[in-house]
Image 1 (cartoon, helix red, strand yellow):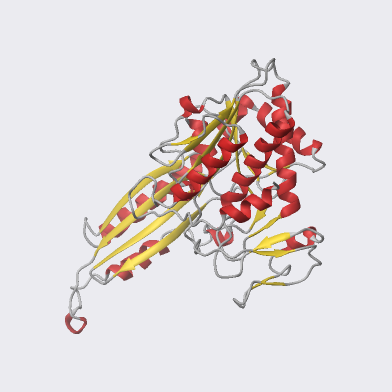
Image 2 (tube, helix red, strand yellow):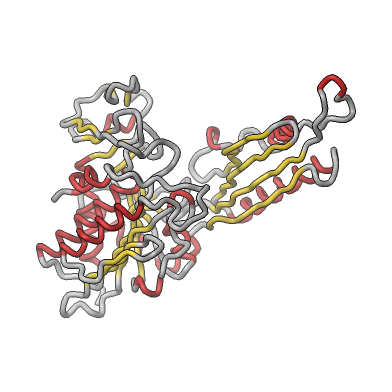
Length: 407
């Protein structure tokens, strides 16, 4: 079975995670995919395939005889999809031998166009899998799961020599909780790769330092006809708070390793309001400065009105894994060789986000990230290339072979 065939099966299962349920996993239907994956893994010969009570899927292949001294290698992807767009009733469409130009997305009225997504120009001749314009596709990260299991099945069918291989699929990565209950010791890998990136051949070991910030604003309500010197409009205060942050340091004006402040929600009334931000920066010092900027804005507002107008809560989410990868830079060198052996020029890119691998690296499992063959994640314009997914499978097989030789 090719990787894209698995993907088409997996995207039929809704696995959207939720930030509001406060359960683990955050949505119970992630178990549906988890149970399917365990069944498929057992059919491949992964005898210890299992899913635990928190919806983490684990399994392993013992080392081929004579390769027991090779370092145990892990391959990881996540099962949940983003709630930025619907993941229910996904209806993927196949565009075979893409000839260039616009791709209508079903009957939604949306069009996948090279004008907006120039990468399409490099994929002429590929078979593309797109959405119908009403949901996301779910390639993030079901393409990664499909790539991994296709590589593992190939290893089993062709008896490719390997060291111990450890496989895991996590829930709730999209809400930053994918590593919360990951059992690194039981997983058993010395090194690992997440397969959760974009184009085939991309290698990522630098990511944002990340934090979330919640701002609760207590206003003073009054009748607008007699509000002078009485009312403190919480919505107006929210806008004032946002205006105290650097206007150009937002996602829509930054790229590469540039950090940002991003307001992700604002709700309320003149009496009370709440704002949620995420803070991101590759540089740890600048990251701390961004948190300090929020604290200064909070202090300024409280001095202007009264001490309890703004309540600020900041919570760190994850950190830049580069510090944990640098001492094991063979992971990057070997990944580059694996990509080159697949006939692709490796591309090392900074992650403008995070992966399970970032947190796992700080939990003692060095874990850079690899591309999946997918593009435009978290929205209705998401798509994958069938040929690039095939290349990712080849890259994974090359990595396994390289580490099998490290006996």
